[in-house]
Image (cartoon, rainbow, N blue to C red; front, side, top):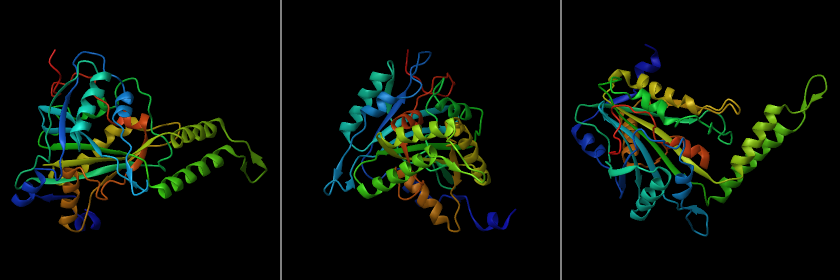
Length: 325
């Protein structure tokens, strides 16, 4: 065992008081369990749905982003039950989620979702998050033959990691307001576009940009010129004990499907490790509260990228809660 592994912790043993705190979310949330139709065509990604629930809100003379944050969660509290849910901060937005999802996924059903984390006294708990491997103006993969979430669902089959519970959480919020930050992001993105398109000086003369560089420049320009979302992807891992870090890596492997070979963009894995147990509890509390709270290294995703991150499964795993035929 390395010195770092002896000093840093990647999980805590939850006390009764901590378990009680993690069992609920602060603030008001409307939790909607989503049951996809079984043996029916499911859209590869949910682009129309993502566009339909986007709400742009600002305040303080359009300086501050006041848009609502929405959570998409994949929960496996027990190996025999895998559920998908959206959580919204307002009743009106909950109705919009139900309407827009029904429009794009005929046959979908809804139930009551849950909040908090499935922890009890003496449970071990930890987690991690994903972040953009390259600067986030490089797009992730958005074209798929089947819903990309199928890869994660396969990882969560009922015979895998039977002693461990999981909550996979995607938080997203429209990019609006924040004029200085948006200007800086776009300035850097277009600077990269110019670099990719210009001639490159070499030791002997110069060369024209390659076809791949031109395609990369076009894809960055398309992302920078359209609406985007602040996005955070996090994992809470309960009951894995000393295997917490390996469980995080195993989940992260399912997200390799989003790697874009054209742009080189991918999702990098970070396991939450700390000298003090309180730091790990703070992370778990942020997941339970569906609050960014500085935990997650958020990145900007386009509408098409977000539509892939919140896709619904099309494979018929026995532990998925499907709509009744």
